[in-house]
Length: 173
Image 1 (cartoon, rainbow, N blue to C red):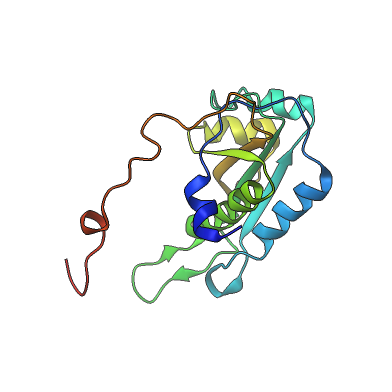
Image 2: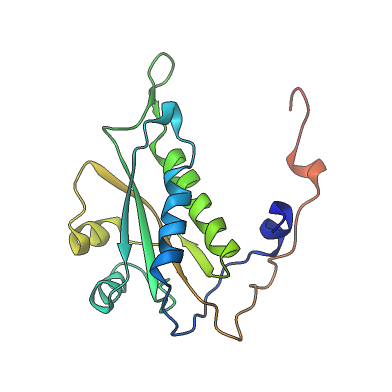
């Protein structure tokens, strides 16, 4: 699929069928995250795949935004493994790197005919407790996914896009 068509047609799916995601497709999604660019190629992402019922039920203790998806991917970043802009302000690349990884996986899922929703509305402490996430790992996103239900549709306002003139400047603001 043409990338721009893929990006334009993808929407957050909040209604999934019961069909399970095949391991081959999951492997391709994880590979897309693996090849995502990260600062200095340090690859600080740490991925947790939730695909069995008990793990998915535990996810429900961490967020109301699980949408009963048959698969969820939690993307964390290792605070120790990420690059830092030490010469200037010490900003860590971890959340940015994990976000790029999540985006790659989200778009690969769409290309494979799967729907997903990027979830940031979660209780990080509950996530840590439920899934034994090490203290050094910062949970950045949950990507819930699966085959869209036949009635899945974009949320109202999904296709409302601001004109480039409102979001892009050239040379200075």
